[in-house]
Image 1: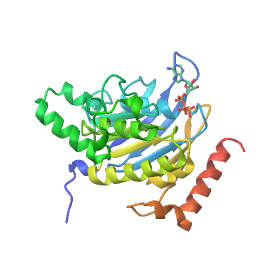
Image 2: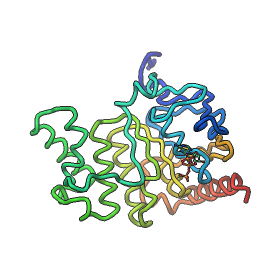
Image 3: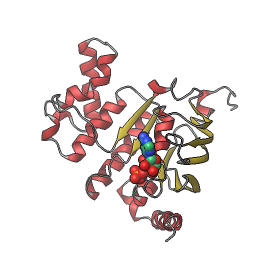
Image 4: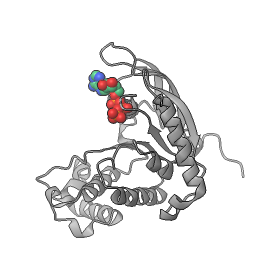
Length: 261
Ligand SMILES: Nc1ncnc2c1ncn2[C@@H]1O[C@H](COP(=O)(O)OP(=O)(O)OP(=O)(O)O)[C@@H](O)[C@H]1O
């Protein structure tokens, strides 16, 4: 079967072409970064604190301007692609006076869909993240993992094609983090978005990703790309595979190298 050249699924999803970024005219935070992310890929960024990982996500989201180079998201500028992108932060940023259901429905309210349709969508999203029972709870009544599930449901409510995640599970205990990693991959398999994920956990990066980028600091640049050729679906059993452990060890060694250790 021949695939038409203009088939949207064959276009790269995110392209960074020689981008440079500084803040307030200071020394460059990111220097000469080139990166192509394919549609449906799961790419993680790891690197020392301050090397510019969050800045890279903000550039792709169009939240901060570039100094030079170009970024394309779905063939558009980040500003024009904004409706196709969702951002998830470490802090779940829920509104404390709104219930779980109302927090998840926040973005849908802007779409001005009839209340009944909105509620159906919210119910489906809560089911997706396993929080049907907590629909009427308030954020203060939730565990850290539950708050993050609400945040994920809210991010998915706009049906994004690209998800940017900045250390979303950094504040969670290891068991909750492992479970949410597995759930995130299940959601991705169901919905097919592309993900760019920032983390300080090498194990998490390897478990989730099809590719891990190790960034070096001062200025931030891509020091190494590591293909994670473990098959999907990945489950709790994946973590006991020799190939998984080898990739965690390799990524850890590479990261220690850029730390100068
Ligand atoms: N709005 C801003 N104004 C000025 N400097 C900033 C701003 N945001 C980030 N920086 C600086 O840019 C550098 C990179 O920050 P960034 O948050 O992108 O790094 P990071 O790799 O995500 O760090 P961490 O792993 O600690 O979260 C840091 O030196 C930081 O102080």
